[in-house]
Length: 250
Image 1 (tube, rainbow, N blue to C red):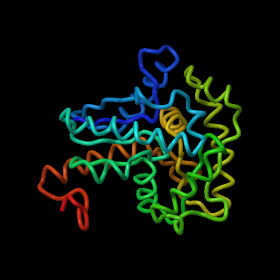
Image 2 (image 1 turned 90 degrees about the vertical axis):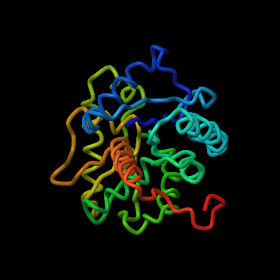
Image 3 (image 1 turned 135 degrees about the vertical axis):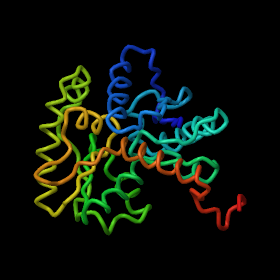
Image 4 (image 1 turned 120 degrees about the vertical axis):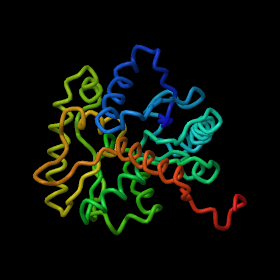
């Protein structure tokens, strides 16, 4: 089984600044992927060049076209599924409609998994500027009623230089800060936590943080990968992996 894991921006692995992240993400995937699953991490060569640019809606809108162009290559190159690797779920819905192979968004998958594990989830991301759009996405996919309120989404308070410095291999500052924010979410009724960032969640997983006081911590990167593996099984068994009712593909 070959799964195309789609990053949200231009971040070539050959660049020294990004090598630690690729190593972290692969270590993250290795914790749950099947032995026979081949994971290929892809960036967006024509996309935005900095995570800071994702903050702006207009930039993300333009960038989604580039993400879609990248994901469409997966089917042509013989991949069995696409697993997104950004909690914004950039271009995921478009790709799901346009491709025959399964396409899974981390936000979609993690929220659905949260409903299997508990009753009310809270999401913690790595940048407070992302909260409004991510909250809107939670509503768009019909999961708002399953999230705690009113502050269904929160952000870690770790300074960005310290957070990014965790890529050096010491993830404890990120773990400690996440845990502090998570405790507030739990007090407000969350019985499942989602680490809503493709950089934060692998740090927590690789550091061994899987639950806090009995409350599961979901890594969306792993949720999207495992859902992709499951949907490949479905498709190979002859079952449909998406609805085409009302579309030109029907």
